[in-house]
Length: 151
Image (cartoon, rainbow, N blue to C red):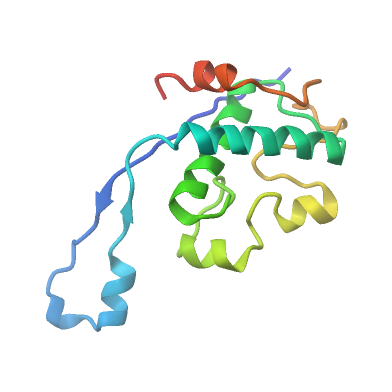
């Protein structure tokens, strides 16, 4: 069996490394500043995303990863995006503009590739033929807390 390592990071950054404001238009400056909240998602959002994940796994006939820390990190990432963006945007992708992606909806969980082809980039919902698929379609809030403690 292959091993997986899950990690998460919540960072605070206000990137103002702009040499001279006079050299940039307001539109350019808007795209230069990145603000993200530091902290954990709310327990309420984690619980909402945990319940959603369990229901969707059962409904879609998919299973959580054999390494529960992968499942936990993804659920917390979805919860964080639900808190900060108002939508469970896939936490496993890079976005130039997260807010715009959340509004567009293509990568909101369950994303279009998952709904259409059962392809989950995050490894949250795995089909039985996936080497990393476990046998569980449930995870407790306590498991999420335990497997992500110290991350």
